[in-house]
Length: 202
Ligand SMILES: [Zn+2]
Image (tube, rainbow, N blue to C red):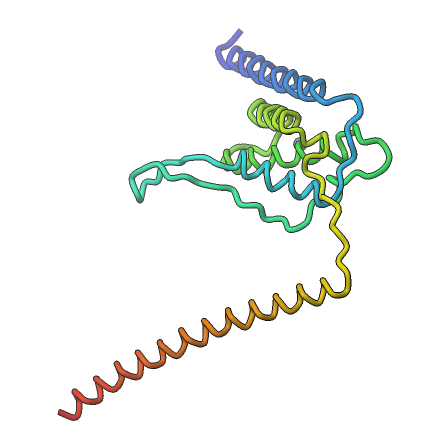
């Protein structure tokens, strides 16, 4: 056997080992889930997405410019959940929608953010993040409806009116403050201008 083919063979084995390991982790993740996953509603899904990014989207990287480690945060870009994260009917245990889909997708986001240079494929690191995330979701009681919206109390007509009035009062106050600040700045800059003109005329 030549060295080249030996290397090729070794590489293949290493690649296969990695593949096997990641599938093992995926298997673990799959077995972690309860048999009957609860349904996932839209606002619940959005909350889960934001909290997962907040929890897992943090890291420190070395900045050559600032010559020290700096904290970085992955900010949630979505204002709405993906359609496939929502699952309010049918089979909630598939990978294609609901909780499992959401966690799988978000783990990809975290992985791609942490390792921007690496390939987009499935691998051990990505599987580990997914496993950690699934554990976090289960431990946090999210599957028991912890992130569900509380039903809103219905307001009477009078109560609605009060909310509106209070809101307008707040808006007026806020704009009055801005008006005051604007006046201060105008006075300040006029004064500066006046001083320059005075100097010129001397
Ligand atoms: Zn994937």
